[in-house]
Image (cartoon, rainbow, N blue to C red; front, top):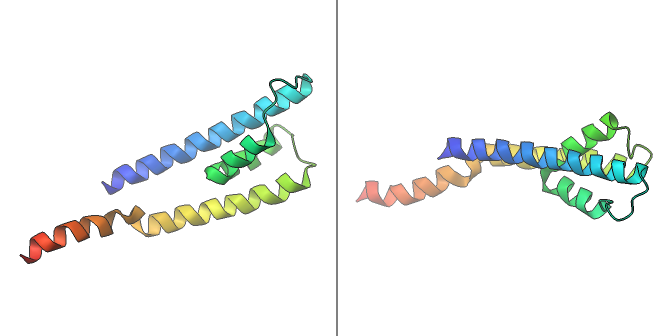
Length: 112
């Protein structure tokens, strides 16, 4: 069960970071083409960052050379990345709460 949680967390992290990088790329392409209809809003980009994709967005800001002059993004993304790393560290340290739930379910059976 715990291995499943680790795999699921890894897949989620990779997926949300790729999604954030793609949003950034689509936003850059729409801005270069002056296409206001297909432009990705900053809200979607920030939501992807808050949900765990800040590391990918921050890294790809430098790869795509986009949004580097935006002070808000240059300060907010590393802060959200640090928060994301802290949350993942705490979840791994607490074993995603699996051990406590399984132990609480098995302990009454063992003591009887």
